[in-house]
Image 1 (spheres, rainbow, N blue to C red):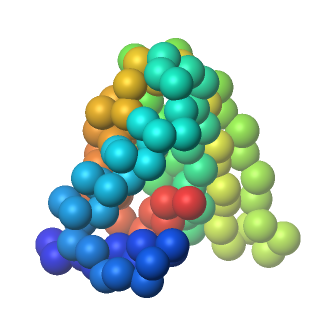
Image 2 (spheres, rainbow, N blue to C red):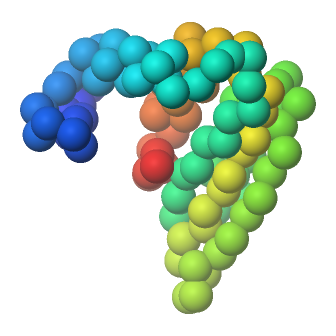
Length: 105
């Protein structure tokens, strides 16, 4: 899959690998790991999708927070973990990116 990511600060279109390289640099600049880290995702409401997301984080002792949209068509999920380093954060984003229909915030 060839995905383009928009770098919000300078407008460059980046491929997925380049995006994660820059993202890792920014994470390391702004976060002192180990630290609490919160992931936020939006997905079309589906128990299957929710379970797929939760399955990725199961070994990380996560805390979840959910919120359904007004018409319940979409659900947002926040997943908080104690992340050891930026590589772990990126690994989780990579795994979630494989789930169809999930928007990563």
